[in-house]
Length: 270
Image 1 (cartoon, rainbow, N blue to C red):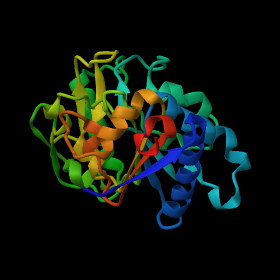
Image 2 (cartoon, one colour; image 1 turned 90 degrees about the horizontal axis):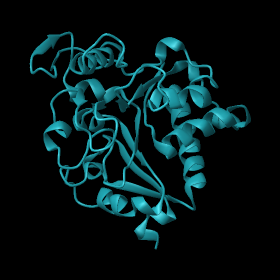
Image 3 (cartoon, helix red, strand yellow; image 1 turned 90 degrees about the vertical axis):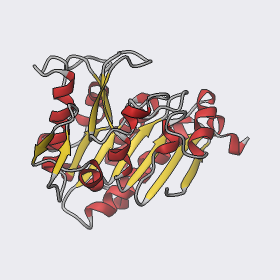
Image 4 (cartoon, rainbow, N blue to C red; image 1 turned 180 degrees about the vertical axis):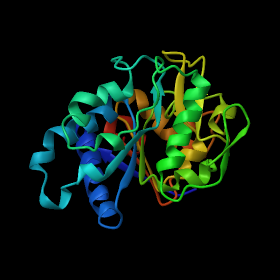
């Protein structure tokens, strides 16, 4: 597992600014080397705060941080199984401050399916996995679906996710990431790319989520959070990997893993 780099901000606002600036610099670097970048977004107050900050300050960004947003593919690490446009969906919360504020190519915004799209939860998970396989560079092969069968034209979770340039993940007080919760090892360690989540310990009960294999095959994983209620979760995330007790401790990018938090969430700083 790649060693984690701890980045501590003074407060929540400082964490948001640090993540946003680092994200811009990363995307500029990636886009200087390849045609498109692939980013997996997260929800939560810090995750949405980063998107709001990026959208609000883009015109004032220095030249070295100017991103060609039309070349960025946006994905989501997890989503609540709700109707399209529901204010509790992660994509809906990103809409006005980020998606509408920056010049994205609409065809490169890849939302997880909605509950009113005519698919079952299992079908929605398989559909999003196939979309990932079809659009991430270098995809080929087969992957097990949520039903356990294999579908042609898909790819293993490890291979297909290698083209995410960065995955952003919020961290819950219980050390969950995406919609991978403690005590549910089988879900977190599924061989699928995207899984249906039922009976979630936090509402709504049904969700879609990337798996650990998909997350950990990404080039970079950035955990982002703030608040004293996250201090224990951050301590667990920085400790020995235990996916059942703390899913946040089991995530790791192929190149880099960063943990962004504020001083109140970092016992290392207290």
